[in-house]
Every structure is written in C-alpha cells, then in structure tokens.
Image 1 (cartoon, rainbow, N blue to C red):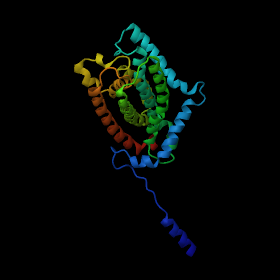
Image 2 (tube, rainbow, N blue to C red):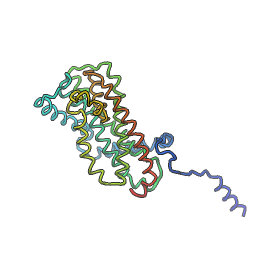
Image 3 (cartoon, one colour):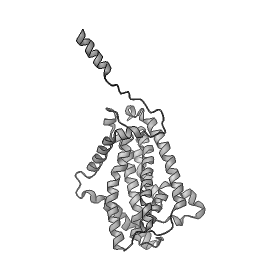
Image 4 (tube, helix red, strand yellow):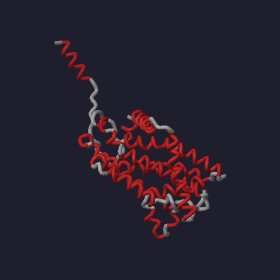
Length: 285
C-alpha cells in the first residue's frame, strides 16, 4: 500500500500543462512564439533545404527568375513602350522593383500552403500554428539576399552610388515582410478550409503585380487617385525600395504611410481570423 501511495503522490506532484484556445483572437502570442523559437528555426531551415533539394543549379534560381523578368520588362516596357524610369537605367529600375515583388510573391505562396503542407504535424502535436506561415516569411529572406547581391553587382556596373536614402531600406524591407505575413495569415487559414484558394492564388499574384508599380512608376497614377492606389500595400513598398536603393525620385512618404496603415489592418484582422481557425484547423485540414 505504501508503494502505491507513493506512486499516486508522485503522479499528483507532476507538473500539468493545460493547452487552451487563445482568449484573444486579435493578439499575437509572442510568448508562445518565443518559447518555440527553436522549432521556428528548424522550420525555416527545412524550407530552405527542401527548396533546393535535387536541383541542378540550386540557389541560382533566386537570381534567374527576377533577372529574366527584368530583361523582358526592360525590352517591352522600356525600349518599346518608353515607360519613364525616374532617370534610372531600365535594368536598375525594374530589378529594384522585382526584388520586393519576387520576395512577396514567393513567400505568399509558401505561407498560403503552409497549413495544408504540414497537416500531419498539426494533427499530432501542439505548437503555435503561427510558426508555419512565419517560417515561410523568414525562409524567403535567403532567396532575397541572393537576388539582392545581384542587384548590388548591377549598381556597381552602372556606377550608381547609394545615398542617405539607403538608411530607409530596412524599413521598407520590414514593410514587405509584414505585408506578406498579414496576407499569408488570411490565405493560409482560408486554404485550410477551402482548397480553391490554391487555384485562385496564381491569378491573384499576377493581377496584383500589374496593380503594383513594378512595370511602371507610381507617378503615372493621377494625383487625385494616389490615395486609392496607396490602398495596395505593395505600392508603397516597391516605390520605397526604388527610392532607398537608388536615391532617385521623391520619397514615397504619402504613399508609404497609407500602405503601412493598410498593412496594420491586414495583420490585425489576419491574426484574429487565423487564431479563430486555429482552434478547429486540426479537424478540417
């Protein structure tokens, strides 16, 4: 009896961890994310390894895609259509816009499919589900860094020196990351419920690109419609990238402020919806 009593007492003294749904849908669980930071690191490392596994040229794909798109844009929109380039060589003008856009498009696609692709893990063990779309945001920075190195080489080739505007570059990079994260929260949650999202996403990305100042400067948009154009959060990001990296043109202050405000709304609403779906996602995924 004494041994059984001792075992019962030992079991009663063991710590109990109770996992409950979040009590606030709109709050990002920073405490849980920090506690599972090592898991986030391994998710990021796994995504990078899978991306280039059994590829012939590996990380060079991060340069080839924006570089070839830049050549096409420079030929058709630049040389043939004579789209104004804010005094920049066409390759610099277009590649400077394709840097944030390619990062946004690739990370958005990865974040959208993150819940469905990891459904076996979700149904077996608990961890903050936000780490899945968040890992897509951070793993995309590897490709961004590689393509950015190509842009630096192009700046050297065209003898364009950076200006003081370069100090704003981290701000616009952070804005691009937050935009991809906020939209990714919405689409990943919707994709877990409705698999039609993965078929709509390529069309959405293509339409979004032409609705953003990638192939043209935002100055072509009439002044009275600039506020409406700024509702596209990538408009301020792309114009900010061009200005901060080259120093040409005017600072996109008004446009960037509107875009930043929209990003805040997207992240708050996306977090609320994602955490609402998180409580039942293991049953429907």
